[in-house]
Image (tube, rainbow, N blue to C red; front, side, top):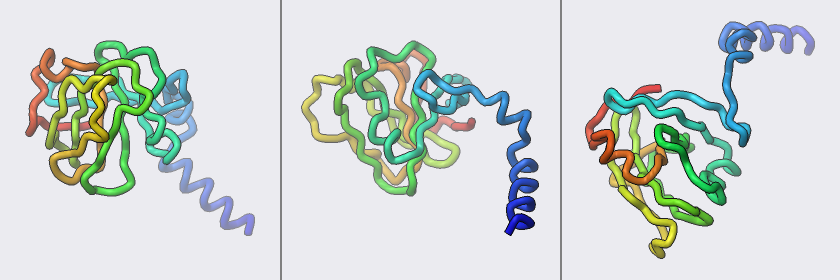
Amino acid sequence: MSRILLVLLMLGSLIFPPAALAREQLSPSGNLITWVKLGQVKVKTEVVFSPEKLYLGLSKRQGLPEGQGMLFIMPALVIQEFCMRDMRFPIDFIWLAPGRVVGITKNVSPQDQRACYASPEPVNYVLEVPAGFCDRHGIKVGDTVSW
C-alpha cells in the first residue's frame, strides 16, 4: 500500500510541481485565480468548480471590480442555466464552449425577476463579469478564449 502511495506522490509532483503550487494565487474567498483571455482582452478571474462554489457564485458580494470576473467550470457540456440569487450588482454572462465565446447575456440586473438565464447552446464554462464589460471591451460571440 505504501508503495502505491509513493508512486502517486511522485506522479503528482510531476503534474503539479511543488513550486508551481506555491505560486498559485487564491482569492479572499479561497478560489484559485487565473487569467482568461477573450480575444485580446485579459480578465483576472476566480475559478469555481465544486458544487458549493458553483451554487454560491458571486452571491452576497458587494461588487466586482472592472477587469475581474468569476469563471464557472461546469461538470458537463450542456445548456447551462444561471440565476441572480442573492446578487447585489448587475453582470454580463459570457457563455463559453472550449476555445470560443458562444453567447453573451448583457447587463443582467439583480432586480430582474426572470427565473434563470440559459446559454444559447451547450457550454461547460461560464464567465461572469461586471455589467457593460462586453460592450466596453468589444467582446463578441465567436471570440477565441484561452486561460
